[in-house]
Length: 60
Image 1 (cartoon, rainbow, N blue to C red):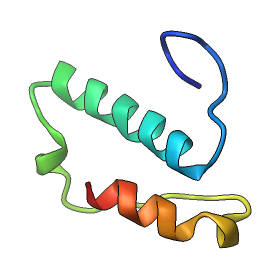
Image 2 (cartoon, helix red, strand yellow):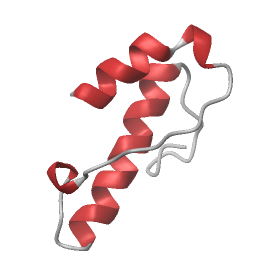
Image 3 (cartoon, helix red, strand yellow):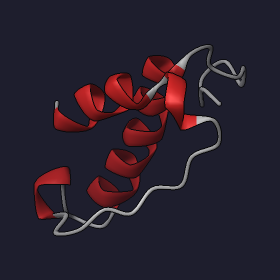
């Protein structure tokens, strides 16, 4: 869910961006950044339709 509007995101691209923004916010509060992540494990439902979008957002 988007923290500012509290609405669910539509589509994998939007959902992945919200998820990574949340991770970024937590890391920055701890004095870290996404660059400090060494390993990332994610769990998905119905990933067949959105894997390429997820990977593209993750790589950004």
